[in-house]
Image (cartoon, rainbow, N blue to C red; front, top):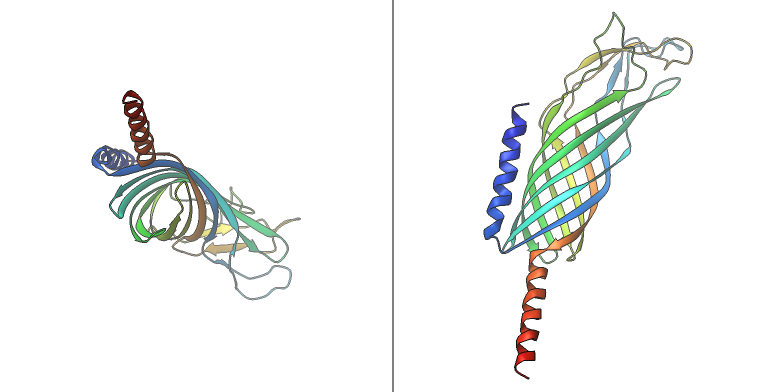
Length: 242
């Protein structure tokens, strides 16, 4: 919880410093992500077939995200803080039923980039995630054989990407890798009627990662606003000289 005030101060400092920048813009963005989590190690394997211990790899599924960004340009370089609402999805194909894994979080990336060749830019930076919920189907909450299903409420990642900017509209390709590990935890899966076909198992330790693509739209650009103001002023002076 101590990290939230520090993060707010960093974002505020970036926004304050932007007063001296050559150009800044504010916009909305939204898109899809492809998330990756750890494996599930089933102790005893499939209950129905009596197979040995078995490992189930998570299926990466498509989640979505949308948010707000503030971009400050400095002659080719730029700083871009963002605030995004993100949903992440995965699933495990257990012997008798698919178990869905879902997470919801607020991501705050602080990006620094460089325009390589118009309209293409590259960027990188840290991402601070405030996780409000993580769930997995099938775990027995009151089990005496395993720990409760838990998750980190705050985590840190690093991301890098490519931005193709066409003015008001742009496309953003991004890879994000979790610095904060998700610790291994033992789960007791539902094994009764309409269960998942597995019993005790370990959700193995992993560093979360994701690939995302987003489209952004700038609804304010200081450079465009300045051009309109200068153009309007010039017309007024010309009118007076008639």
